[in-house]
Image 1 (spheres, rainbow, N blue to C red):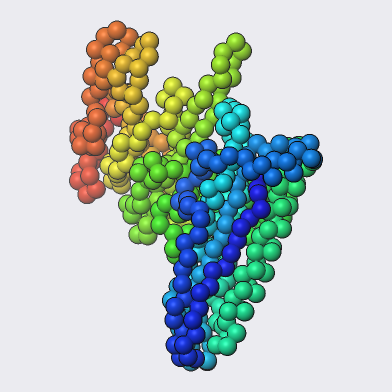
Image 2 (image 1 turned 90 degrees about the vertical axis):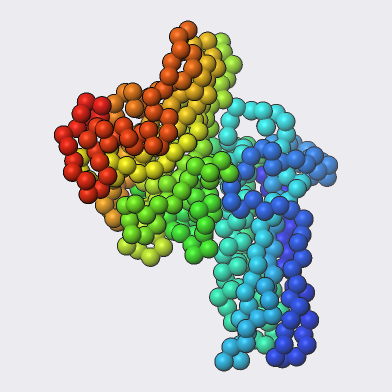
Length: 424
């Protein structure tokens, strides 16, 4: 659910002369910026608004949670006078997550992502419109004597469309306060498609036009202003989350392409319910490779793998390239670890996986995994089934050396017949 959005265009402009337009000020309004990650329930810290609750109660409804994003735009600097007599401004944009976001305790504790996904969708719509409003204003030229009025007209015109879209979203997925799960899924796909391609063209699309966001190998757009965190957050696969810890694992690489590609790790939560047992909260990591295409600013989002040990997301400790087959081109190597403390084991689980190289501009929808020897793929250090256990390969150097001993040398070196430690 979304409360009334507070959206303001902030202009503090002092006209000194036609040639000098200074003092266009930036006021930092209430709210924190969380553009670069997905929401968690810890972002929802406020108490329920009494008047809002009373209004819902009169309709026989109760809010499970709500957000109230606010979009703020202000010119950044005095503006540039053009040869045609017009003025062009640079702009700052802030999509603030207002602190009075609320979640009911029963919602926070529920074993489901449904409501959080709904609130994330509201905020993603706001983020997308903040970008579009910024771009629309930044690409315009304004009259020297009417620029304030022209800026307001563009901004408020787009905000009117934005508000109607947010209201339509709520009305369609929560008709009369009842969840329409099928419609929520459709809107999830619509919003994801718009984020992937940095557009508003799919908010009213039928399912056939947006359902492909759930398949591998989708094309996504990278904006000139996107760093790795912005890019991976905005273009994350549907029903995944990109948090700060994911950014620590993810990296940009040029191993297989002359242009930069991105290896991204994302979190996916799920729940296991067995009869007679409490619901089990689980998580896993999913890895994707974003490779440049021949279309400018367009990347292919290819699935790499899922990382999960005992229904828990492991920690990625190494992402590098080394030869793992006999073709003379280095492969992607990923090492993950998970601390275990249970009836059977106390210590650290080590896992190593290798993925075949891709040709520039020809990445498949899913990256091929290469099988490795069991000792290299899996190891455990600690006590396992009552006996001490030691992992053989725990560092990037140890893994690379093991691959070399197997006959897979670095690029340009002679390739020997592979030994049994690795099989193709």
